[in-house]
Amino acid sequence: MRLVRFRHNFAPNGSARLGAVNGDSIVDLAASCPELPRTMPELLPLGTAEIEAQLANKELIAIALSDATLLAPIERPGKILGIGLNYRDHAAETGREPPAIQTWFVKQATAVNDPFGDIAFPKVSSALDYEVELVVVIGKRGRHVPVERAHEIIAGYCVGNDVSVRDWQRATPTMIMGKGFDTHAPFGPWIVTPDELGPLPDLRLRCFVNGEQRQNGRAGDMIFGIEAQIAHLTAAFTLEPGDIIFTGTPAGVGIAMSPPGFMKPGDIVRCEIDGIGAIQSKIVTETGEMVIG
Image 1 (cartoon, helix red, strand yellow):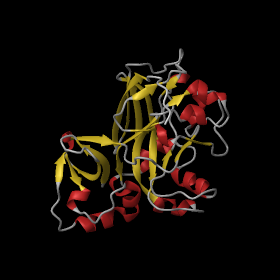
Image 2 (cartoon, rainbow, N blue to C red):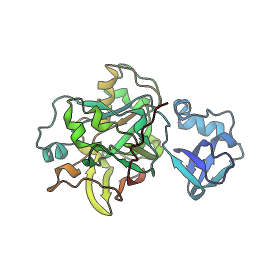
Image 3 (cartoon, rainbow, N blue to C red):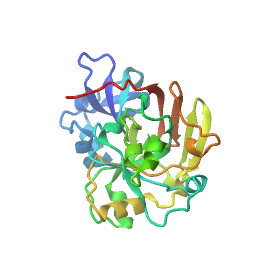
């Protein structure tokens, strides 16, 4: 199943809705089955089988995929967690040893961006970088979850771009400031449930800037696998439905190029993962407008 959050381009109120992608159309879940939850964090714990059971024998109301604007699958995740240097080739290109322990940072909820939304080029830096990543979406509460049971709390997977402002990232050991700028966490285009994917190690991750391929990695080359990540995180705190995890990026980032291949206004960055899909953004200069209240 491919679960999506979308807006009907021709609907009078244009409100966000939940859907299930079926070929070139989107089944409107609320219109087809009003009993289903209306937010993604409430829907995910049901799982594919229960959602399909509730849709069975219902008249499915669908719209063309081309008539929809795809939104971030989760509007405001409770947690956006990212692991650093989780591919050996990426650690090597930055001149660092592969980490012996997992290194984590957080991205802010206001960094969430739609899968085809514009990415803001910051007023305070020109070191804007891309990182294609496999994103894990949590579907059930989990605390002290062992590696062998970690799969039980995974609702599905997305394509993500862990956009990074490198000078701000390196200014503090936590990396939080450089990872959390507004619009710098686009992900989607939908949540692909585990039953739809083949073996995760075989998935290829690619990133293109203006059509030039910059990254081409394999999910199986992670230093710390997804199950190990979940076990590590839940040893400290509870993961909840709707939390998302950026699981690391392969080699090819802009900062490792000579000269650095940072993104600039007008650039188009595309991230794609086999079996999931692609997201794409245009880099636009932020207004720098003061906002209070």
